[in-house]
Length: 203
Image (cartoon, rainbow, N blue to C red; front, side):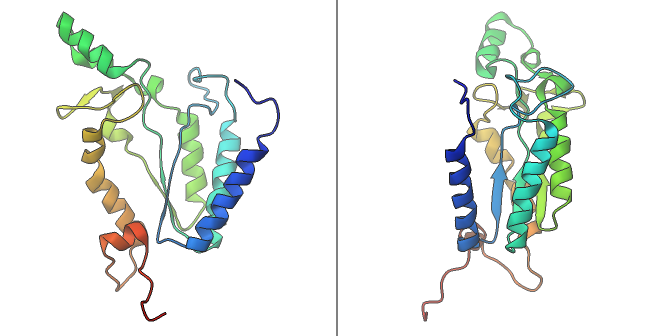
């Protein structure tokens, strides 16, 4: 179903959410997204593109600049590669027919929206307190994105990671979070990274 008017409700909710973030003022905001609705010159979009890559960049840059102006740090996580078919189903069929499981993978060109990724990189690079984290090289080797990595099934459908594979990315994600939130001379506990500082009981 297509909404044939401006989505004012979503815009209002978004503005309220951003205001609330500035009020809470956490150590870090983690922003993730889905880029399949962004126009992509290299191959067909999932559906008719909703926004151009230029609009995607401008919107992300505006959001990050707003948070940055409020003294907030933002970690932006790039979208994962998208497979054309349900990966567990494909792997089951491959096992039944003795096919190579890598036949259930795809090329980087098929799996990635490179226009959106370039836009995200440009937007994040323009903001001081923002960092882009892209795990694409954990999914793809060379020109191929794999359905199974180090014995772990990567997807539980065509674009959502399995719990096991997601956990395997945790150490690297923690390093990225620490690098962005680290304050010279101050050691933060992991709970503070996740929840922010505890209120002073004397106040």
